[in-house]
Structures are given as structure tokens and as C-alpha cells.
Length: 346
Image (cartoon, rainbow, N blue to C red):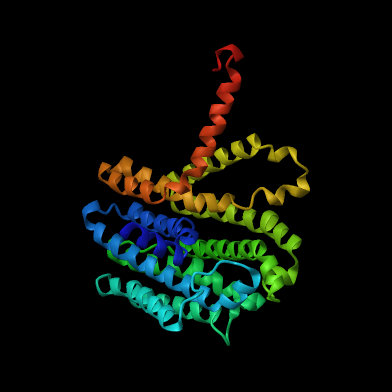
């Protein structure tokens, strides 16, 4: 009964949509701060637990508010909406509960002016994006700008402004690294909201919603993602890591080599070049969500075996993000199976 109750909550706040996509890059930033500071494991456990609780409350609040305000359009489009059938008192109670979960950890976390200001601004973006009369999600450029900030830029600002002063009080992050990181976050955010609008364009058309993708056209949007934004992101990642960490830059080169191997095995390079924009859309996301957090943790474990507990917990909570390594294993197995004489293959 208790397990079913937790599953219902997990679904209602749409946790599967954001836990494996929005949280791992934030976790990667936390690990990156640890990487810079050589912080003992025993000093970080409670801070990470409290911060994770705040992330769950904040993301849950944003998605619940969005579902509540999207109810009419979702019903029209035939989309599932977990606020359907609930009265405004019940919806408000869930929103208040998630808000409390989001903010309560900050009674114990170090609350700096930048982190709290960024968190307040993030909530402001939630409201103006979803709630009438603002409803920025229905306005082409404002919707994109709002999503970039609450989904990508502000969470990283909150993370860095919380943990850098806490774990690296004598070693601030270099300004050049911060500038490159901000540029990367804006590129990442712009690409991700365009991908979301691209996949949701039929429902948006049905509800007469003028998103950025609808305003420029789906084909042009897909080509902008595949031929412009993804290559730019990959270049900025390379420059950022080269500026910041030689070890992580080498890890990034390994990631690119493995991805090229996968694309080759999947026959991407044999299709017409004009269709390549369909093949590279998720390369950067696979780096942020899967390879980067894991590579930082592995380097931390080589430095200090105590970090293996963080690696194990990350592997458990984000096990679905290891699909990249599963794909590589499948392709390597296929190569060796094909190389064996047929009479030896059972």
C-alpha cells in the first residue's frame, strides 16, 4: 500500500520526465565542485541529501503548476493530466506541500544572497511561464527565454552559489570558466526547449499555441538543432573542459570517440547528409545526463576510494541513464559475435 502510494506521487509530479534528464546534470555540477575541492565524503552527505530534497520539491512544484494550468488544453488534445478530477483545494494542497519541501532544506543549507535570489527568480519563471494572464509558454520568444532560465541556467547558478562557498571557500571558480559555462547553459536550454516544442507541435497546433518552433517551422527548427546548436554545444563543451580540466577534456574526447563508433555502427554516416540533423540531436544530452557525472565520479574514486559510495548511489538512482554504455556493449558484442566462425556461435 505504501509502495503504491509512493508510485502514485512519483507519477503525479511527473518525476520520470525530469529525474533522469534535469537532475543528473545538476549532480554533475555538484561532483565537479567536489572534483575541484578534494572534499572529504563525510562532510558532504547531509548537504547533498538536503539539496536533493529541495530539487525534488522545486521540480515537482514546477511540473504540478504547469499541469494545473495546462488542464484545459491537455483535455482538448487528449493528453493525460494528473490534476484532472481534483478540486482547487486539493491542487493547492499539493502545490503548498511541494513548495514546503522545496524551501524547508534551506533552513539548514547555507543560504547565500545569490542562491536564494536565483531560487526566487526560478519560482517567478514558473509562474510567468504557466499562469494566466502572463502564460509565457504561449508566446514564442518569452516562452523560450523563460524555459532556458528555470530549466537550465538558474538550477546551475543555485548549485554553484551553494556549494562553491561551502566546499571551496578559498578557491572561487575562474571567471572565464563561468562565462563559458553560462554560454553552454543558454545553448543547452535553447536546444532543449526547441526539442520539446518540436515533439509537442501537433498539440500546440490543435490549441493554437504560437511556440518558437511553430513560428519558424518544424523543419527549420530541426535543422537549427542538428546543424547549428548541437555542433556549437559540442565545441563549447570542448573549450570549457580544456580551460578547466585536462582529465575531463580527455574523458570528453573518449565520449566523442565512443559516440562516433555508435553512429557508425547504426549506419548514420551511410544515410544522405541532408538527413544527418535527425541523428545528432541527443549527443550533448547523453554527455550531460550520462557520461559527465559518471566520469567525474570515476576520477574522484581514483583519487579517494571513499567516493565509491557516491558512485554506487548515483548508479542506483540514475541507472536508466546508463543506456549509452548498454548501447556500446551491445555493439561490441555484435562485432565479436560476427567475427566468430558460425559453427561456434550457439
